[in-house]
Amino acid sequence: MTTPLLIDPNDRPDEVWADPVRGRFRWRTLLSSDVTASDTFTAGIMSLEAGEHWAVHRHAEAELYFGLTGEADVEVDGKIYRLKPETLIYIPGNVFHGIPTTSASLRLFYTFASDSFDAIKYTFRDER
Image (cartoon, rainbow, N blue to C red; front, side):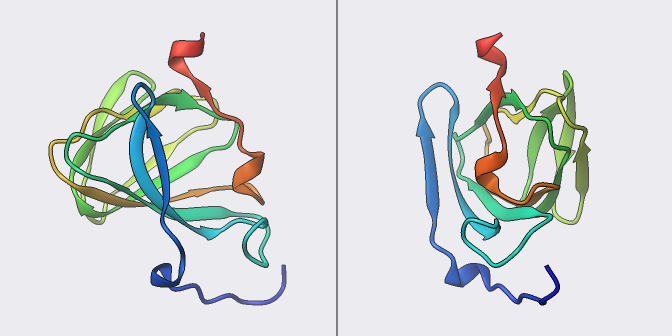
């Protein structure tokens, strides 16, 4: 891609993941070749309310989490890291990671080195 993009998260629709075992949260896709004229990266903003979680999973692509608001523990390769505003967690590819049940709301920016969100194949730890 050679054309710059300016994307306002408020112009993007909320999407919802709602699975009693694997988690409940909302996200807004900011970059993904299936919805934006982009390549190279997939990115978005994820929101969890108190009591929500994102089950431990992995995918081939490395990922970044950058805290926007709130705080929560993030499990990465069996260790717990505290994500809070203006902190970044680098998650290597094929490493199990997830967000245990949150005690307060959390918003984070995430990005993958992948053209499209649809190209990311998730494996959940409970599938092993």
